[in-house]
Amino acid sequence: METGRASGRSVVFAPLDPHSRAETVVRRLTDAITFGLLTDAEQLPSEADLAAQFGVSRVTVREALVALRHKNLVETRRGRGGGSFVRAPSGGGLRTRVAELSLPNLRDTTDHYAAIAGAAARLAAQRADADDILRIEEVDADVAGPLHRMERAYHLEVAAVAQSARLAREEVRFATELGTLLWSPVLPSDDRAYDPHADHRAITAAIAAGDGDLARQLTEEHIEKAVERLVTLHLTLIEQ
Image (tube, rainbow, N blue to C red; front, side, top):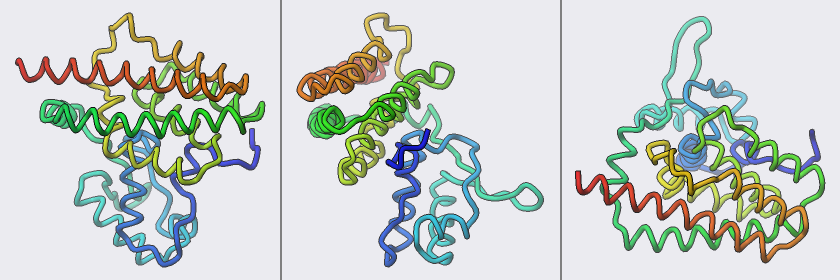
């Protein structure tokens, strides 16, 4: 269903400033990989296609892919069926990052993130149309894929529906700093008190009803629940 508005995934390949350096392309693709928008083993577009979509030179794209290979986020295969393929971060690395968390820094960062995500939900309630609501619902309906990927895609879709390029960029930026941990696949998934789909349905209903204040409140509460689970896992790993 194409409405002419940006979907969450389209934010990944939105044009950059034509004078952007390779570091900017690296940051954009790193964000997308850690956010789960580009999935493990997924093939990236060709160098020519990436250059055209980003609006940069092929040399810039080539330099960015070299940097991503050094970060072990991309691998290049030669020959027939070759190309550049995504390598998502491993769960073991995530456990190490969780164990090394600074709780004061976590609280400060999540407070900032809750403000960004809450603002996006409030604006989405003001600006969403029926097609936008369907797109948000379709993301949340993805029960077959990993929960952490759905979580991150859901929040980026809401940011896209808010029609604020700055908020969408901030949402992606937080994926690198926080989202990979906050919606981490290493978090326990058997917590019956934690029902993200129910939270999402409530947020989406508030957006559909045009109730921006409620959408923001529910989003902030949803993020706070995720923070509590992350803190619990951190303390468990420290004890171990």
